[in-house]
Structure formats: structure tokens, C-alpha cells
Image (cartoon, rainbow, N blue to C red; front, side):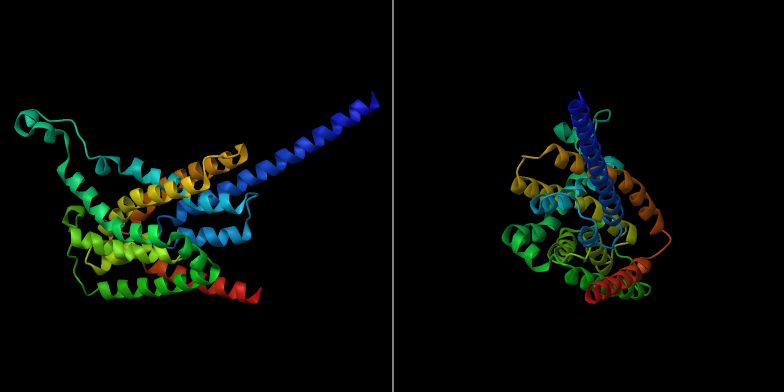
Length: 303
């Protein structure tokens, strides 16, 4: 009977150790979700922060899973946009009074929203072309702390310069509907920089592009949110298909928890940012980027 008791004790001890390790991984995934939810929408580079976080906080997962995880976790943040801006994003509506008799099936369609989605599609073209042509090569070349640090600093300086410049310039476009197809494409070109260089910030690049092209801050930020929906859904789909659908139970748990955390945090951050930019400019984020970039370079050079 003694050996039975010893076997049970060993089993119970191993079970507690395994449970403790699993809970530690869950806490790490929650941390990744918090960082993603904050940095996805503030113009400080979510990819850059996630790469840096992965340098210091390692999930017990394969390299292939982490490559997919760091992208797909962003779907949680994207779903926050879908929830908060559903009325602005959904292109269909219930017809009013005699609209069906007058307009037929078009009575069910919100024309301005449909046009906005076409403009978003145009803005996605540059990034889609580069991703399909050179996606993996770009990751191999630029997904490292050196690129992240340099782009944090460079884009931070650009933010400060653009905001100082804009004090003397008037806003040309103060509504989403006022964005032309040409302007949408040019914003997509700015987004392309973020697609190539981690540390740039997709939201930061598109907001800078919007400000340069004469968009009001709130319009630039809102268009950035909308543009993120198809971009990140597409990027996540590519990563999932590349990884395959053979997730382990632990991998599934880590991914879902990270996405849910990113979703909850994003709800708060998006509301904060939309309120913040109505009264303030983006220079504080520029200074944050510069300081963080210098610290990152200093740390990795020293150690």
C-alpha cells in the first residue's frame, strides 16, 4: 500500500507543477493581450512592442506558433473596432417608409458606407501587393530590435515635426465622406511603410499620412480604425493558413485568452484616444517613441 501512496503523491505533485506552469503561461498571454490592446491603437507600434515583449517574456510555444500568435492576437483588438463603430461600418439598413418603392433594393443600402468601404479597399492595395510579393522576406530582414528601435525614433521625430507644421495649416478634410479615392490610396502608401518596417506603427503611419494630406485628427484616427479591419483580418487569415489548423489545447487557450484580453483593453483605449485627440495633438506619442527607441538601442548594445 505504501507504493500506491507514493505513486499518488508523485502524480499529485506533477499535476500541481503542470497546472502551475500552465497558469503562468496564461498570465503571460494576458500580458501580451494587454500590450496588444494598448499599442494597436496608440501610434506607438503594436508590432514593435510585441517583438520587444517577446524578447523578455517567452511563451512556452514553438517559433511557428509565436509567429502566428503575434499577428492573430490582433483580431481581438479589431473586434473592438467592429463593436464600437458597428453603425458606421455596417453598410445595410432597414428601409424607411417609401424608400423601397422609390429606390428598390438600394433602399436597404447605406450609400456613403458602401463608398467608404470601396475607399478602404483602395487604401489596402499597396500593402496587399507587398505582403503577397515579399511578406516572408520582409519579416526575415526587418523583424528585429534594431529595426524596431530605429523606426520608433524616426517616426517619433516625424510626428513632432508634422504636429508643429500643422499649427500653421488648415484642415482640408473634416469628414470620412470627404476622403477621395486618391487620398485613400496615398494613406495606403503611408501604411505600406508600417507593413515593411516593424516599429513604425500602422496606426501611426496612416495617421501621419492623413495629417500630411489635410485630414482632421479625428478623421485620420477614425479612418485608421476602419482600415485596420480588412488589413488585420487578411493578415491573420494568411498566418493561420500558413500555420495550419492543428492547434494543441494549450495553444488554443493561449490564443483565445490573448485575443479576449486585447479586445477588452482595446475598448477602453479606443474611447480614450478618440477623446484625447479632440483636445490634444500626437506629440506626446512622438516623445514616447523617441525615448523608448533610445532605451531599446541602449539596452541591446549594452547587453
